[in-house]
Amino acid sequence: MKPYFKLHEIALLSLFGALVFVLRLIFKIPIHVPGSSGLVWVLPLIIGVGIVRKPGAGLYMGFISGILASFFGVGALHVLDIFKYLAMGLSIDLTSMLFLYRFSNPAVGFVVGAVGNLTKMLVNYGVQLLFGVQAAFILVGITVSTATHLIFGGIGGVLAVLILSRLRRAGVITEDEENTDN
Image (cartoon, rainbow, N blue to C red):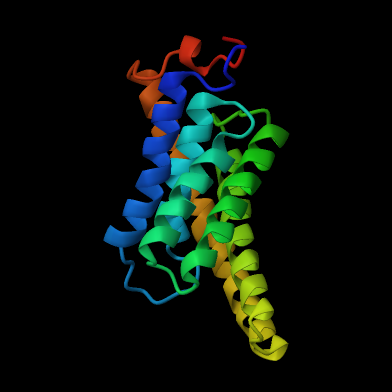
């Protein structure tokens, strides 16, 4: 039986999934605006999905980063942080498939990044509701956070598209590596 992901794809996706976790630890954006971390979180996910171009790539990276975040307890939700990362990876996967992995357009990167970051926010609030945080507080938080999550996730998506195009022009990523048939 032929494996779905090749060994080099698994290695690449694992590294990018771990990079999401590392970026979460290293880069603290001191502007204190909700969703600003999405600027760097979506970068490795979109780049990994843009290189591998197979359904499930984002979900796999979300799983890796979620396991690391849950194991090391860096987020406010600790063990339940895995759901946030899985949802972000899955939403980036689905949105990328919707656009047929055409990451040559910055608008596609903006939409994919924004959807990924918004999904992370919604799962975060959903878990808080599950723990009994009053819905009124969550609704106030969502109204402000939605716009900032959209903007920062979108900017991260545009940056990911620009990085992917530079990697293609430099010959680091070839068309053969991007082909989903092999």
